[in-house]
Length: 326
Ligand code: PBG
Ligand code: ZN
Image (tube, rainbow, N blue to C red; front, top):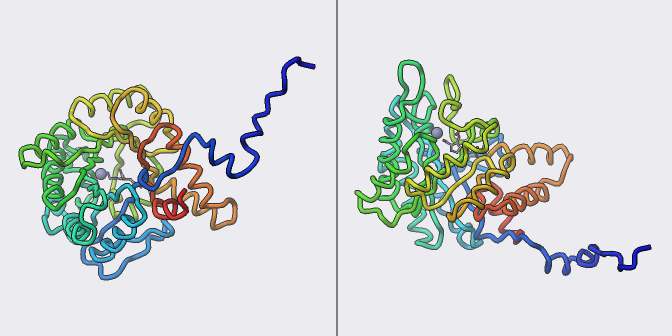
């Protein structure tokens, strides 16, 4: 027998109050950001089959949702737009009357500055081929033409009242170009969230239904990161810091906790992580079969993402988590 008393780690786990008092990580509503789909021409919200509880919104219904999010103290909302018209260039992306600018103005009218408003910036929802920018003859996205489109998009969304723009296309040089474009348009106060380490992931499947942005042919592996790569993420993150990002994002979240932890350790910028559509949908699918408790599983995943180092988590469960005071 040891001369020392047995260490009893169970003492601090005995009651809910003890566990709560000694929790190392807490989920606060302000750390959650809700992704929202706004569809032009829609007259009533339209549920998304592969994402239970998530709908495409009209500019009116999105304003009500924003009010609810603001009342719950949620940290923000990120908007994705679905236009009525698509072409090879994705020119509806920078239409000041497109879905994102229209929704942004409606939300500002409803909640003023009470909710942080992000606008995702990419062209895949606006091109008829579903790629993140115009294509060359071989079907690859033309980097600098895509970036020029992102600058126009970002300035349009800033003009409409976005607090933050978030380029998700993974083109080289997109952060520097957008920062310069915003500054030139007198939007020095609009921040830039870099989807710095965004992987070519199988977990985006349901999103492409929700945003109607599935590719007619091909994939995004020519610009999004290879899931095998961790050190390459450091280069992506570092470049975006140098190019002027205000926030670094890692996406998806749960399969990339090492990358989230690295981002937190290596850089002083806030770190956001995106719990993507597939991460959300697979929990719901299992829960529907009675195979696990969906709310608990989502909460545990988001807690793990925060524990790994994320300051903010983009999650389709943001309102549910905020309501349960997570
Ligand atoms: C567009 C974009 C995607 C997501 C966010 N922005 C899809 C993609 O890259 O194909 C995915 C989000 C999700 O799955 O929830 N560039
Ligand atoms: Zn895209």
